[in-house]
Picture 1 (cartoon, helix red, strand yellow):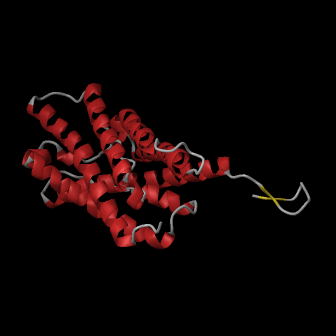
Picture 2: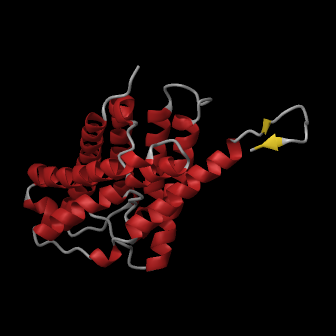
Picture 3: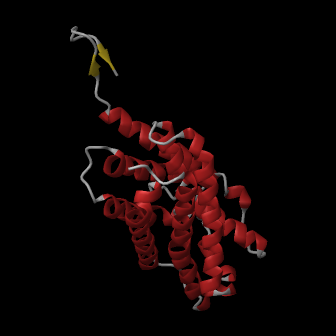
Length: 251
């Protein structure tokens, strides 16, 4: 069966990324509203709830639009797949634009749901470095998270030998676990579009955003995703025997 045309796949990516930001980052924003209103600190239990929200929406999107666009909903994932030959480079720009547009739409939808408190108190769930996290350390943390995510995606969704119908659950739970680990250090993005949308709407509405930190959420995830994809491909590539000489192999 022929895959949907590029335009339809891009629309699916935009919708998927928008819902990722709305439900995932929106839950983080709602938690920010609650903690700010009660003058309370964010707890590990709060991080757990946010992680579950992200896990749920990632699972839902994979099962919903995976058959349409592949459900990348993350520029780093798209680039990682392209580097390893699992996605056409000529389609990468269209996917990246669709994902970033989706991130902006999702951030706007948070305002629609939570009102201006979601922006002024919750920051639209925008990511930022922890008080004790340095710039380079933040980039490393984001790279590690993206590496793990991409490694899992390659194994459960891309590999032809992967068990069928498990991708949504496994990838969703992986995202949730990574957020629990890295939220304190970087806000747990490992997705440039997820960070981009809330940054844009915060900036347009006069929110407090440090664009100087944005490269952390672009460079780190892209490096990590490429590393995860290349590492998995390297581990699973089988040598092909050429001719009758058993010592002549092509990798």
